[in-house]
Image 1 (cartoon, rainbow, N blue to C red):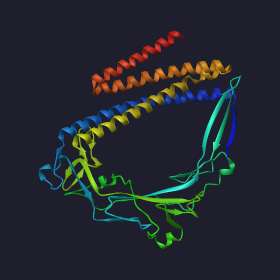
Image 2: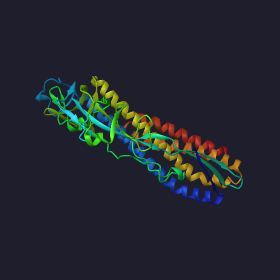
Image 3: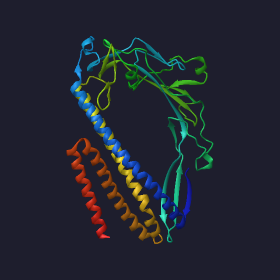
Image 4: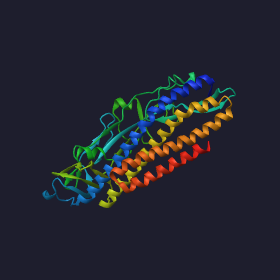
Length: 378
């Protein structure tokens, strides 16, 4: 059942809020510029680290350790194994030969979801209709329902038991003649499910509260009729298998390689060529860079929208005039964000990569030219 809330905001209140938004914009824009500049430096440093690594890395035999490669950046592939059996200390779930064992916990909870529609009224005020729904879903953490809009749901989220997630690693993981460092072992991904059956033994104290069903340890009256507050736990592990590594050799193990512009330590499941590993890292670096660029661009855009918003709010006394102003300020904010983002990125790259930076600067100049055209049309 949905819960509806209708709120009204007067024209004067909206003007006051829009003036406060100017402060947000004046803070957000320089913060975003700093983020963009830092991101370009980060990408260049990472790119140079990978380029240095590609030149320095030597391929070695995983089955024998050569002292001549000590402290060098090495590449090798081999099968990672352990003689240990990992056991969860609370639930007694074990997996022999697992390179990592993880406990995952979920809670069946009501979740507040909302959608809003705002309408402008003659005179500059607004009316907002917000509809709240409360579907029951599995969540990674208990959901606090005390602030839910619908009073009927504020005390409905309960949990039968609060349980922490946990991760366990062996004391020693072998990679043929080598052993993984603790840092490398922690980075292994445990994505294979640990099979649990009704015959799997549970500690007596746990068995009194929970049961095994659908490959989970289940806290609740009946897993087939899930109730709010029920808890389920499942386990995953990293199985033994081939891994590919690029890192600095340190005795029979590894440490991060210290390049001029950063550190380098790569471990991936499966058998990958040295070129493939560096290509994957370069791709991840570019992806992160574009994500952060989009974040910076968006923050700058919202910053300018906040600064220009009083104009459209003032004109909202006649709604269609406010709509026109809102569209115009949105276009100006977009153009300003594009120009400032491009100039910031270009200035950062010109320091390290003049040709690329020059190309980006041309885009920025084009955006500035577009802004001038918009001004002349007004």
